[in-house]
Amino acid sequence: MPSGRVPQAKLPRRAVLAEIRPLDSELELAAGAEATVRARVQNAGAAPWPALMGGRPVHLGNHWRDVGGGLLQLDDGRAPLSRDVQPGDEVEVELTVTAPVEPGEYLLELDLVQEGVAWFSQRRRLSRRRSQTARVPVTVVAPGGQRPAEHRAPILPHMEMHAVPRRDVERIVRAGGARLLQAAENDAAGPGWVSLTYTATRPAA
Image (cartoon, rainbow, N blue to C red):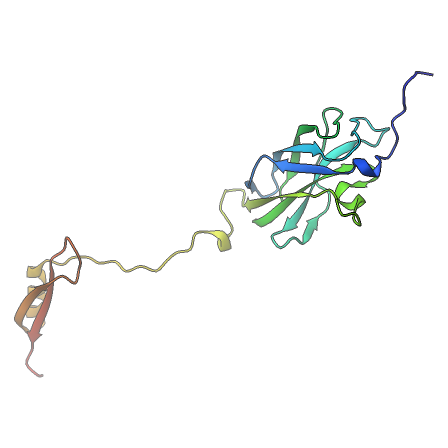
């Protein structure tokens, strides 16, 4: 038989600690589209992660959650580690994910998983020190690139102001059967404008 130690099928508990740092702070993806997400993964435990683990390797995977943290989809993409990762060492991983089909705001959650065993964040649930997931805010837009209505920039009310020449105002006053008594200048329109207050009278019908 070949010499050497046969990898154990299950990582020891002291190895199941990871720090995951996404390289993107936020993402915008088209609904239902695939995208590549990059992250640096550090072995924060006390035993190595062999790239080949007796048929049960360690992969980076993801879930989808709503903005409140509620789970929407467990287990989306998978990406293997490129090499053995010793305690304190880190490796960069590229993971292909598939965006939800409905436009909206989501959280992309990253976690490590040992295939056929458990997600890292689940194996040490009762321990003081447990592996933490990483979450990236994601805006999913319609295929045409339009953001969901509730997340578009709000349309603020505004008032337009258009200047009317004095001679036109006086003509309108006369056409209405009134007599202009006074046209007094003021600063109501602000700098750069000539503002007038008109006083007119018209005989009673």
